[in-house]
Length: 472
Image (cartoon, rainbow, N blue to C red; front, side, top):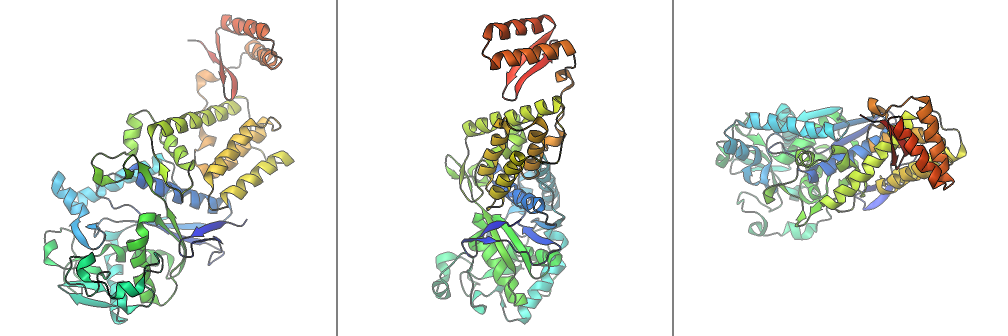
């Protein structure tokens, strides 16, 4: 199958052609573990999960690498501000190591609850300091660095195409006034960035390592370049992240990676758009922020949020409201009820043979392979549930086929024991009542309901059709 993806670098849809037929290399920027992930952060990881599932659905073997930023990320993207983890450690009275591990564990708790497939490689920045030092040394040999004020900087003037991902105006950057953008007087150009910090203002930073330039810690950007190349090589297929990473983080990653190797680093850049609340982009800096755990406490299943995100295309901004989440919850619940109903009726996973069933599968594939069009793919799912020409086995099998992408884990939905009715008389009466309703014979349908009630069964008319429950 042919997958088309929107490449941020070219600003166009491109047919995906992997470097190797054996394996797709995919790197996704992971969390900075200084606080809980809010649901806006999680939207990005959900889109990356859909991408990975789509590639696997189409037969590709995917090697997915994701970092954990547990050192080096300052509160300002321009190498300024406080260390995020150090700031939280001081606030809660714990070590930076304890803070990083606590929020790493919390992140993966959310990750698993949302049925996001774990990466093949999860790499902590603190475990790869030697790789970062080695990469900085390569840049140093190539004439791309300078030392100023104790820090090692990357010079954007050392390469001809800095900012190509963000389409920055390079000529204006060459003549930028340092003070207009950065308060770091050590920089030769305001867009230069730190590769290694030894600056004394971070003297209380507990995470420090020896290096050829002095004891210190790595800059944020060098981490992703070093770790991705460690596990995927100097050229790989896909790099993902949030759209806010384009102008600084991903721009700087490209600059240092391609300066070090002299090669094109990544072939496809994919970015997820923001989740918005009433005030704009969702952010941790606004005080209380929405987490998955908070949604749980308000009565929502993590799959409700997953469904909500699937309802918006990853490249479109998505406005969050509890009204919208309630709509998603209702829709998701209906899908689960329909699936349970099919299971209760004995539906089995089968090979799709009818032309009708194959047509549904082909339409779904067309939509999901067209830049991960999950809104259209969800519409395809509802089309299957409403298609009376499909047999129960076909409906169930199509649901499972679609769920390879959606990730609801429908195959493992348990049918509650109290919903399993095997009484022959009751099932016969239910079948007669269903027939009566189809013939609009309402008096007979009501009479049959009363007979079922007398036998101790409650009839529930659901979106999946009528079901029986044994009265307690």
